[in-house]
Length: 225
Length: 412
Image (cartoon, chains in turn blue, brown):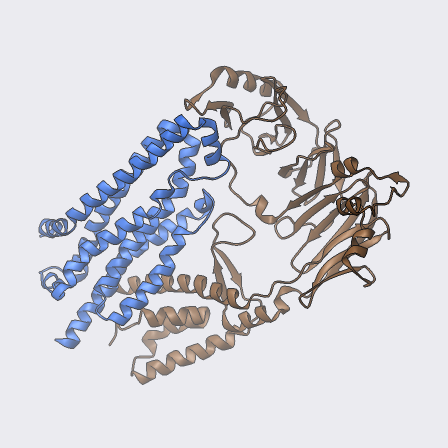
């Protein structure tokens, strides 16, 4: 049964996963082409100076990509479910409803983390060609909040999409915007380094919030049906 | 599990609300207190200041006498010498000292240190500029150095360690007794300055060292500091007089100048200085230095002469922030505010600004009453909503919003 659910989820998001892998690859290749240009055709030490001392961030164009992936996978996973309320069928499977939702969410989360891991791997590999370990560490501390923000956005997308009432969808969206935007504050490199673990924890616990909408959806069904 | 998911959402709601709503509040209601700019007049031998009073810029002396701009500048020739020379109003001598434009320029400097300057991510690598290249202008080096368990220069072009140079500098540091790793570094990593003075580095034992590169060779000097003195911050300057290298800040909130002459320490009068909350300004002219310590609700100015003897002091207090109307209204509306970005730091923090007053307790009670009323109207069980009511009681308007947006319907 689990295998079948995984397969169904994979069918829903495989195009999105492929698309985002491609998009990430394009953005990352573009980033390192720019770095290569900076190091080769400007003075390498001037380029380093701008990054290390003046706080320029060569990964800046990556900033909202993890957010886009989180939102995209969330929509790809839950939009088909709310068309004609198809999720009802899922809830009629002989598995406890919360468990089904968690399996779905867990599968999506794994795919999301896999995409992120690939991004970060390519980023670290590319960076270590041009920069020493200190710069890579600095960059990781700078870009990690963006990925954690993408993760929170993914979880909250599920919450918003499964919510049966439009007015609440709007309210959730306002709160979600206020919350997720805290991962993308305008700040100097490494600004999040002291609170990174708090943000990681917050992103982690948001993974289960889809249960709340799922519960309301089922309750709503009972009222209408 | 579903209940837990709801409490997570309520927490997220409270966080988002307690960040965003007070932000909107402050952009509408913030009243910035006006901090007078206090300077010392060698003509009157007293303090003079520019202050904003009821929205109007007022120039006055300690006794409250009002001056026009021209009168004011004429009383402060050491500060406004460029203007006075241009109009021919500059006196030839002040206190028996001949007034020379070039000398006045050399001695005129301004140093400011805000709390945020001490609370900012440090550069992960640093450039060590050549101090005596024989060229007029400074140039950035081809490499950057790290100070881990040894010093290593990494060439930017190749991203490789320059072994030869690293070994040379490493040996020079060890010869002087430097204990790796460095705990604190101060310097001006820029080529836009008059002179390269390298870096001042506190080693793992708490000792202070001076590191420079002179014609490609390492220059390392050990600096004698009092044994009990713990340096917490080093702020280098690039002043034309070359009188001192840097400001040193000790754990006991003392301020020292690190003099260029024999690395001596010169203590500055700065009683009550707290680098976490106060802005420090040191303004220098040919006859004296003016040290200003500026807090939220007070200002303390000390003038010293060229021998660092105190000439005069001035202090001024104004209404503390929490008595301002904007803070009082805040106290009525919100129990606290979550600040991720504060003016005192470039790091993202989880600063909780507690309301300066307790009026919010009334507001919270009213909101609890409203919540109870809503429960009654919908015939909900009072007991099963106790946690929600507790949240509203503690977090006020934020918790009220969060518990409304993510309603508790588990027991219907």
